[in-house]
Amino acid sequence: PLVRDLTIYIKTDNDFSPKLFIEHSELYSSTVMLLSFVPPATSDNSPRNYEFIFVVDRSGSMMGEKMSQLQKALRRVIETLPTGSIFNIVGFGNDVEFLFDKSQDVSNSV
Image (cartoon, rainbow, N blue to C red):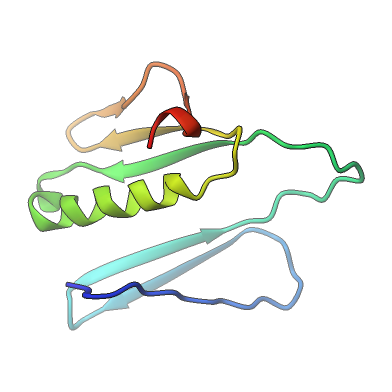
């Protein structure tokens, strides 16, 4: 388990098309994925309200410490979302289910 924060910086060559990075660790028998995309630039400077949907594995393999780490990570990510944004969490395991009936304002959730 990690005992401190881990920050990974990935630099692209100004290619803002969506990218999927997949890394497998034989040592920890795990695979991680990072989906990177940049919304198109706009010419006006008006504030934007975004919606974030987090997809979470709730299967039996995530029980215990893995789920605790996931919950801590999600809390931290949600705390850093832009003001005015909304979010929801969809979990999958034996079934697929949204945490909330409708997306929640980040300012009311943390």
